[in-house]
Length: 161
Image (cartoon, rainbow, N blue to C red):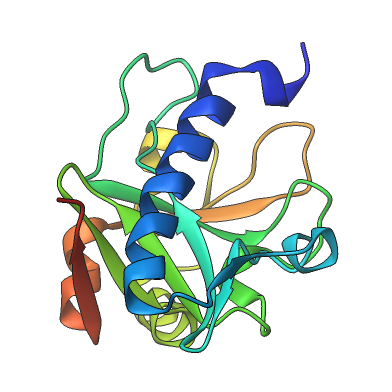
């Protein structure tokens, strides 16, 4: 099955649409990223900067429900290339919560992750909180922080309603 046919992909697209409508209220000239920009982890471009939108996710791939308490941060993507946390052309990340989005500067989040995370590599995703995790057979490198950790850095709350 192609990823674009999955429920996760469809959910992500709906979350991006929700965010885009909020971004257009702040900048009517905002636009979707080009295909080339998408390879740089950019979803939207506006006068305020570039944005990547992150929907609520699962702790484990086998989990049925999404959650917003823990956030996966991508240092390297599945191909081993620069992940979105380290993507220098990306200005802001918007993390979905139930009723709003937390918007943070990517560089501020990178520094926070560096401060919070140890360099211990763990084998189980439930142990990835403040540790490094790599999925079997992939070249990615991930870590997890708590969503509440982001409230310690400069952030904006964009209400969905």
